[in-house]
Length: 477
Image 1 (cartoon, rainbow, N blue to C red):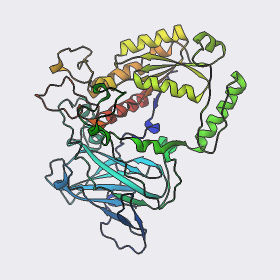
Image 2: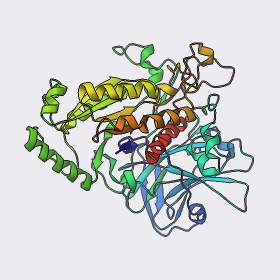
Image 3: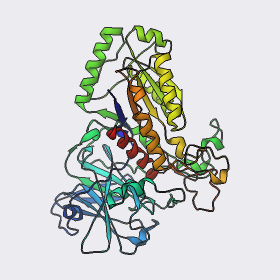
Image 4: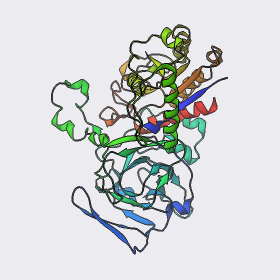
């Protein structure tokens, strides 16, 4: 029986946007309301802020330095629909942009965007919902970014775009909006979320939470997405010398260290029971579980164990196919001590012939039965030398990424290959999402006449679309 699973980005702070249709009236809400009770507090930068605890709508300030500031009519938080909305005027430069939104406070939640269709106005309204997230009541910092002026990613599928046309879209010359002026909301934009949300789907399984002691009236620091300016990539300076001054602030990512991952209790109990059984079977040394958090599990001999020994111990052999993130994942999985043996194979491209050949060889030579495939980053990265249809193009001026259609077809060929599942009934294929990277000087290169030899297409819009296709391939398998 064929088994394929997509590894969701639930463990990633930067979860990809999901575009869904929602109730129009609930999204738009009533822009005007009268507060009768309020919360008064001070931001980490010393500015006073006030929240109404009874109002259903909170108007938010527009960033005057945003690249689309002149097109934004209003931004508001609609408590009733659990969403943050942006209204763009008729005739705006970017009526259907690619947007990214994130709430950060006690927990972190990415907004799920949809365009709200209106019947009495030519303005466009885009709303990002947090109703599916697992978050607690409290004060949250809001970051709203425009990534591309043209929303050619998954958002376009919510706008009655033909699936085949969307899949065949050529995004090669799409330009990234100015990464230092792409924030739509003003500095220190905060919202009050009045009640808890339990989450749904994968987002209900776990979340990122503050390590610090927390109260509902706590005002978190601003979480500003990092940028990577020119001459700030590690390959351009030595790791053992001081990072250039112009790189320190835009590349700062220290706020991530203030969060740790929390599993839902039901997920944790399942893992706890699984690990207890493993301890009895193969003598794993486990650290005790504490509250809702997974602590470090020790699997001391994993570096020495061979595939033959692992097979004799009845351990599941897992092969990770990918590049650097798969290598990091290998060590993380070992540190959890899940009772499996892991092998890593470097794979860059989504070439189904090469990947299927490696799967067969790994099954016969290393007894691998589970395969975690994490490819796609090289297909749209700055080092990509692959042309549109399975051929290498070494001319840097003609270098192109793997478009949606080719990526979708490649991954479908891998997952749907019948010969792989005929190797044994225990064979499972897992497709891992493509990780996000910071916006930078390489992703900012654009234009049909530009030298694309160092262009990087790994923007949020493209990566989210790749991850959407990964999920679609698995669901259709």
